[in-house]
Length: 245
Image 1 (cartoon, rainbow, N blue to C red):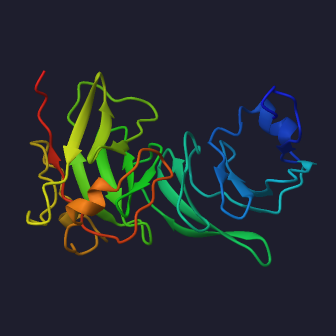
Image 2 (spheres, rainbow, N blue to C red):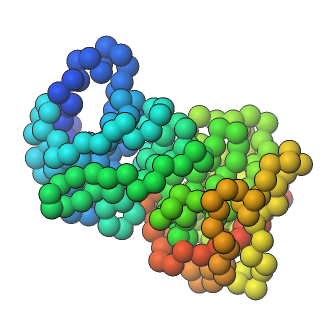
């Protein structure tokens, strides 16, 4: 669309009419790749790679891949520098990579972790499950590197974390929970679990071994938004910031 809302171009799958009749709409945010291509997915669970300069109308995708997960793809996606996109499947975040020559899509990993719209910050992929658990995932493997229990009174649909002013912010029912990095001198132990008895990140199958925490400077460099990308994968250790209101 132009700034005045005039249609310039569009894309729809060749089976758009059948998808429309079955409520299989494009329910995920389009991810803009640095080379001008676009990755989009939705309730059909099919990911499509498009030419952003020429969407081409019906059935004009450069490539497709799917199903990429066992449930709907819903909500905002996160794109990392390069051609990797993290999609919010209801059953857990999945990572899809776009290739250039020839144009194609391939699955990097599929997790059963989280499922809320992800962001990339501090070298991890952050997502919140509808059980109220905040996860930080290794962007290369999808393994759990960090987790925290929000313990809110209710669970939201499409809960999306964000970062700013050195804080990781997580929506939790009718409140926002803020986590702060304790500094480079802090212990690299994972966030303590709640009394619910869920295992910590170190106890999860396939979890990566902890690495040294990021420096305070790296945390200060965080920016708000799902496209925030920082160099260096580290074991982020967060402490909950008390509500002083």
